[in-house]
Image 1 (tube, rainbow, N blue to C red):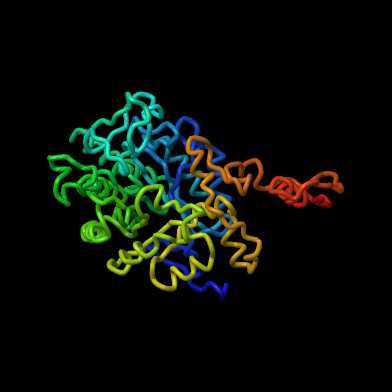
Image 2 (cartoon, helix red, strand yellow; image 1 turned 90 degrees about the horizontal axis):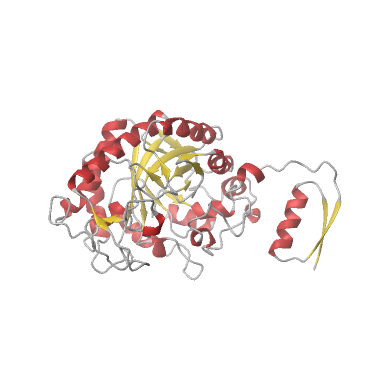
Length: 413
């Protein structure tokens, strides 16, 4: 632990104390639900990460209004309260905290993924690089009416109330990665000429109204955060100065207690194996140094060394190692116990992102997404001598699994 003093220092945000500085940010845990309500596979998935020592997990990809992506969780009525309670109890049992994130998706989706409604944006106009061009010739986006935007903000408030009623430690609003709120914030795609467009305050209105509804629903003694882009990575978009201005506006109104920052869209913040580790950290650091709020950041930080350095240099306050916990749910415990060489580090191959319509998974760790069945395998009733022929990835994984089951393993190559 002494090699990583910043990682293992606690942090308190409005009464929510994180035991260390590593978190799992909101992400697409596709189809881990039954009719929109988290199922037992979802509980096992998040519980395994809490068991592994992480400080905080986030349930992302959650709709608050009818007609969003069918793979999303659907926080639309009070059925969801019991689901939150099940998830939070499982996470709290192992000392971690739980954040409920809300994520209206907007136009960053193909029409074929919807049952009836079409993708929606500030106005019915496609912007390559921010709102992707349609895949099908018949595909287009629809604009939002004022009444629909007012209803969306109210839905966010009701969803936040359900999260608190279900025992969550905080709530977060998703406003990055070219999804709906990000589209409204960006001058590159918000061409509205009413109160929700034009000026900086107009483009920020939907976000402000939604966070206001959330704050009113949960009170001022409960954690509320927002996930933003530090930079649009678009020549006509918004930059770090705009991000700082927005955060200061939200903070001045008492709407947020922390901010989670990414950069650009999925292609920028995800971080492939061809990009340097923590490639977007400096942009995030410039925002962090200009504000007085805790900053989370997930963006290609893979190794404990990079995480420790980012914390030590004041670039951020909490490191999101989300995909790193796909590769190894016990990343933090292994680091704390001095077993760093046993950590399976994420190789940033993007397998987990390429299969966006299927369950969450990892090419490096077959247990991910299957924790209910495989996280704690029962010891073999009869221990045998097992010969594995071939020391490739499949052979070595078979050897590991057999050894963990109690068998004596011989690997031949």
